[in-house]
Length: 112
Image 1 (tube, rainbow, N blue to C red):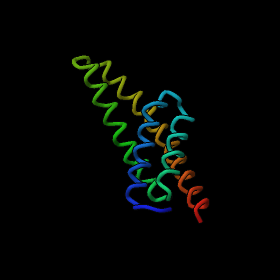
Image 2: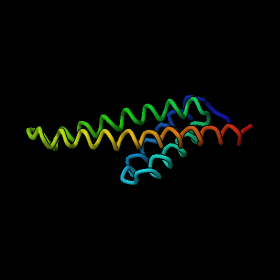
Image 3: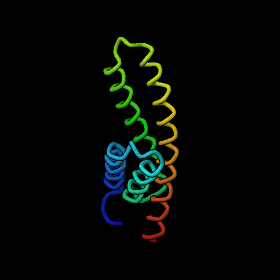
């Protein structure tokens, strides 16, 4: 691969986060597809896994802040939202990491 390695990592992070925001409503395939594309763009398994963890952190912060603003002053609804959001996010991240690993691995095989 030509070019600066850091630019590919940033590009992978951008694609992974952008696709995650658009397909977050698809439980399994959304995370896997976002991880796969981001891993492919990152080009290596290590970069893909790093990007998937950063994507998960950014995605969870956006959802937490959004949920806190929506349910401000309604503690029972906020608690229910937090519990359900936590379960959905953790199940989403598992497939995001699997997709990122596979995408990075296949890109390594493709370029070598």
